[in-house]
Image (tube, rainbow, N blue to C red; front, top):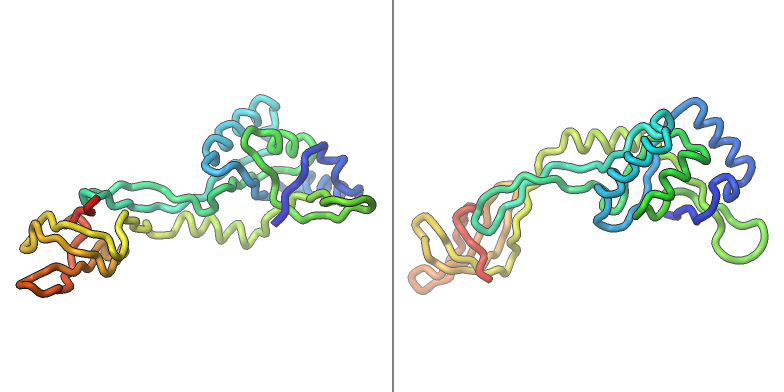
Length: 213
């Protein structure tokens, strides 16, 4: 995976590549992946949408998306927090008609690193060549957005094998033990509890236990 270097878009592309891109821009907007600074996806989306309005490019840059899937995080007290997880951390997707103006607006947005593309070798001299931003395939785009719309929430829990826990409710209340298995999809775990002097595996609900610090 390679990324475009700084400088004017038209100046960095070979003439035939620029002609191909201009032709595409005339007929169809395509989805492009843009690498951004880690943790800045939402900020880039907001800033880019503002820049689109400022530069009056809403007819060329049509959508800015951060693909995500639903998730449920189980807190230490057993309560559930509904949240979202990024499908591609460090990237945003932009549907746009690629030309010099639209490229510059996206590329010069704060916290944008570069478009994802294919590196073109330099004709002369040393060093890395320029990179032509490459649109995502139609099938790939369909798969990405289908995944985000149809996927069931993923259950996340701040607990792992080996963690020490204390039971909060049920017949084993106040028992302490060690987690030996976690089943997020079932919202359950197994822990070894000392029952009558013997280590016994017991299945418990997430909301029945608390992780010991």
